[in-house]
Image (cartoon, rainbow, N blue to C red; front, side, top):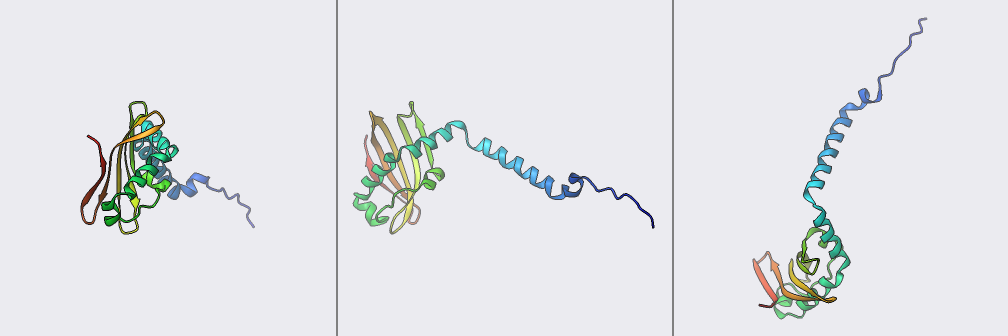
Length: 145
């Protein structure tokens, strides 16, 4: 009987078929994440998470509008994922905000657009509007000139 030493292939040689595509996909995903979200955008989203009052007051004002109730119904509170999906831009040392987030109403869904300026610790809303896709419509809840 012959004793022969069987050499095992190294790990990379055995597993390259799944390791190489997985590595390339991971590098591509990390690159897309780094280029798609700038540091300023991440800071703006974090600020929006911390400032729940900005959206709560805007929804309260929208729920008091008769056109909003007629087209969308009562708007539910915004969930955290809606803030992440939306677009939020702070400027002027985080004293001015322009935000657009998705909202869910009892009758329909849409986007809530806010433009506000911070006066002290309170937000002064310059414009609050709601965009609806079906039918294509914009409801202006509040607009200061």
